[in-house]
Length: 459
Image (cartoon, rainbow, N blue to C red; front, side):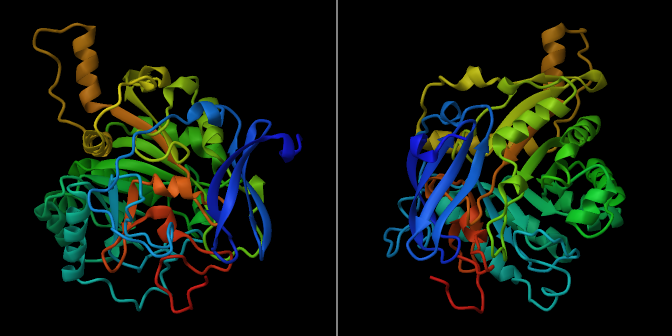
């Protein structure tokens, strides 16, 4: 391996994973890989892989026009990421706001952003309806009618969840999505219909593999049958479904192709697949080994390798909203017999004309909602027969399909440049908007940066 002293080095900032103090950092390219290197004066040097293989990171990153929040916090005391709320240095509007409506859960997953489980969170009171309404109003004041995701914990443990969905729609949010493990959707035949009637558009369904061994490892029990039933319930109710897989090397990275195959087979009820490489929150006294990580380009390579010849590298492109190192996506039409047709190729949009920041924000929000919303009603074949273009356009209106991936940051990989480019914001209990990765960040002992805790602040 080439010595890092002779490698390309791009400066940025990060946090020490032990004390969470802000430290200078470098993105260091060594052969086909890029590492985040940082040194804390008290706790030493850390190096973690953040990019492995093609496409080359330098060619992937492209200039972005900032689209700051419309109501940024006017002053800060300690700077990024300690004064999030959002502050005036934040470079991106809110595309999606997450409201955590419960800390309770009906599973006890070994991996969990919110550190929820069925027992420890059982006695924690849910935020009442007045509090949730306050959150909706704060998001509207700070960001306008962005997309909303109701999350937790497991939101469906709340019996008043349909009321919270309806509240969001009355407040003026046109697209509301539910982040769920799907258990209640599967077990209660009328539950999906009640949520749809309340105004729910989409379900982000935890879906980690096509074999129960994956669920037993990642979620603690067999769940595949209930996952399939949840998709059926949503399809019957007219709710769009996004299968959302947390990827952990050695557990389910070999299931990438089968998850895509299943999603395509269940189109148009399933609107797409969203992969989330595992991030290491909680107690990790020693840095997770690089072999336990999978990076964005490795996911692209796996999609192509396991995709049965349906996908090419140019089908996938950097995000139009968040920082380029945070995600990728590709949009397709599902044709007959499981074939797919790409709707975008990377070279098609790399030279697009710059647009006004506010207009760009509106387009990004609308594009996300359209990609994951329920399919448009099928108007049936054109009465005049139509040509191939007519049939293609008709198919696109009902069978669009996305494949996307978002690489969340933990204490070893956090990059403050990426945080400032984040457009997915969690609403804190006091109504502040905080970048998702900053809100969920913990030090190596599990102490959070922003989440409330009984422990003393670690910095």
